Length: 355
Image 1 (tube, helix red, strand yellow):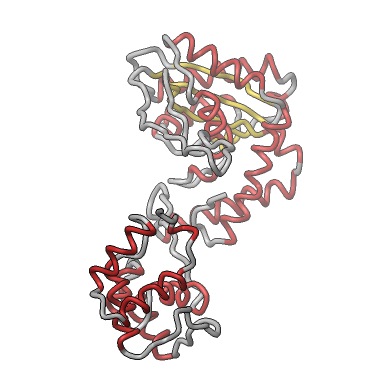
Image 2 (spheres, rainbow, N blue to C red):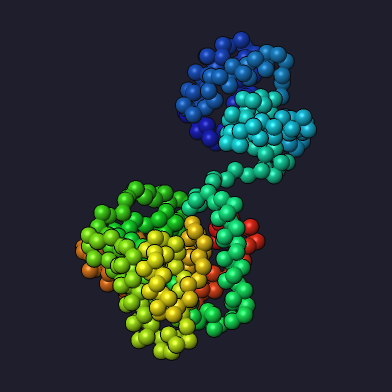
């Protein structure tokens, strides 16, 4: 009768090996008899030979030896692990085991994480390697904005109109984060197949303030955005402000957009001066300080992800509907976040703000 090996204590099997080894039965025959009784999952031949050698050498105990805590690690070993790691920050624990063979992989991991307080992290993508001049401009523009807010408070916030362009695709794949779901420990792990955005897409330009969306303008298919086209959009924006925000034009508009060429072209600047609008200084290469980039567009693309649209008109309708349905408090939050980000930018000496 075959006895399930999983139900058998290790010491019982070792006792059998000790008995047969004392009768001078060869390890290969011991292994054969163990399989005959306990099945294919019993102890392998390598361990049978190991225990035969130990019993032949005089061992009588079939139980594991008790361990008193973790093995001690010398300061010299810790220093060697740290020095090797510092020479190559991307080195793996397996490679460290080769360079520092006197300790196990688990001990090396414990040295790195517990004793040396290191953790391995991935590099974060940033839009650009900022120069000292870029960082200085980011700090100066942030201080300028915050000084004005300190003087004018809500009057300044009420005057801010911000906007930018983005692509809206006929199909945008869901992100890995969006596909997360609750599963039981016994449930099979779901799979997610790699997908790419569709070729069909629409260029959308959105402008908004703390009270809500002001204008959503779409580029005609087959055209490219330039200063003249952007000026036409700004004229539409002015009419939208006149209709949606009574009194705002007379109180003053402060426009915040990035440094894309159509936004800073002479034609655009001249038109904004004719409007009498104040242009808020926006530092170069700073999407982390552009409200549309860190607040509006991520939420819009999250909403569109996973839905397939048949044509441009369906995409336009959904973009328009989503932006119009968002509450005023959500738009106000996006402007308030800017104040926090500008302060973080100053605190980080002009480096990128992650959150």
